[in-house]
Amino acid sequence: MIRTRRGDAAGPPPRHPAGAADRGETLFISDLHLASGRPERIRLFLEFLDGRARRARHLYILGDLFDAWIGDDDDSAPYQAIRAGLRGLTSAGTACTLLPGNRDFLLGRAFCRDTGCTLGRDPTLTRFAGVPTLLMHGDLLCTADLDYQRFRRRVRNPLVKRLFLWKSLAARRALAEGYRRQSGAAKTDKSEAIMDADPGAVTDYLRRFGAAHLIHGHTHRPADHDLVLGTRQVRRSVLAEWSTTHGEVLVHREGTWHREPV
Image 1 (cartoon, helix red, strand yellow):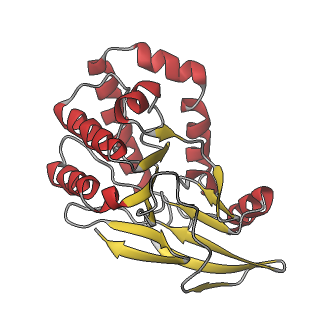
Image 2 (image 1 turned 180 degrees about the vertical axis):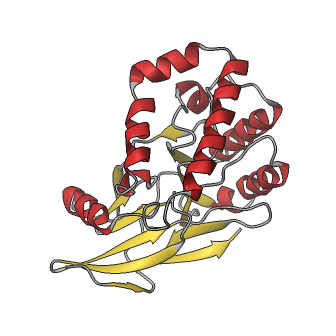
């Protein structure tokens, strides 16, 4: 049985990595949906990298950093600036881990080599001072959306990805734009419940990984849910989507979790 309420969670802080004793924060963001047609949002992200994020020990980006990522060879000017911003962050001493989202699952080794970021798996189980924490993008939790889950399995097939990346950049851009249009049209015919995280899926992942805290994005419904799972107290934190003028970051510092505007 699960009971849900909103509230604040507390837990012991993660250990400081070597050489970063003054970096007390771990930051979590997702769903920025950066694109060349959104220069204000890109500027907001670059200012965040050059400011708040540089004072953190670790930045986790839990998917959909980009609105569409068509391959690490995309040399568009805005993406070069984002690469440089991330490289500046990691060179300054902040670790950065990226999880693939449904819009940027083609991020690969070349991007990580250029930026100094680490590409994590979805889901990833980590620990903060012994507290097991499960990090996900969140689309795997939307199990009621059967059409999307079938599409997800198809496009994540290694052969399908390889065939897509063999195409020219122009062809890939056209395909990505077509997908965005189809995705937007499909959402208008789906209920809010179908596109939200399924409670049964949340329970399953928490139990399967033995996690006490689940952090994810994707649904664009930021909230903190305290749950009772059997005899255990657990928490689900849903990250916010960024807009043109506003972003939100989930912060872990000195045993506390809280949200702050960017």
